[in-house]
Length: 189
Image (cartoon, rainbow, N blue to C red; front, side, top):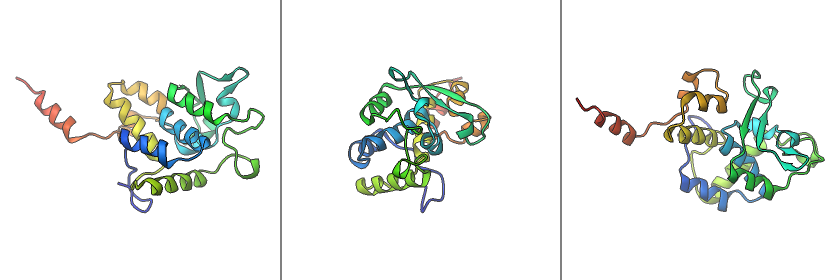
């Protein structure tokens, strides 16, 4: 569990996600910003640095979000990720300004929102609803674990997350006591 910004980020339950998106995060921009993190399993910096054209086309919201290699941690691979219907709703409610370069502009419209500002928005939201141990990385960890628990093949998840190796991806995935028990009980000789 994360404490004073140290440790591993908490994985969010469905109830915690609902609480954050209904009572914690206030603006449509904040819903869209963290919705991108949750529904694409991207890092907060990848969400903050999205260009408007990475999400928006001439006729509105695209079918895929483009995560450019220059904005990724390893700066090696560009990824395209399908837009989940819930994320599409957040983006439509946000109504991004297609004239602006960045999807999430910074102060006074200059550059993009800084990841430290996004972190502050999330900490304030968590304080409003009484959640602890949550960080901007919780959305990524939650999405990756959820996909894994749903039986999505690891290679598919790796393609979405941008991890260079399966070992790096595996460090994100939570294993519950129930899953361990189920694994043991599956041994039937």
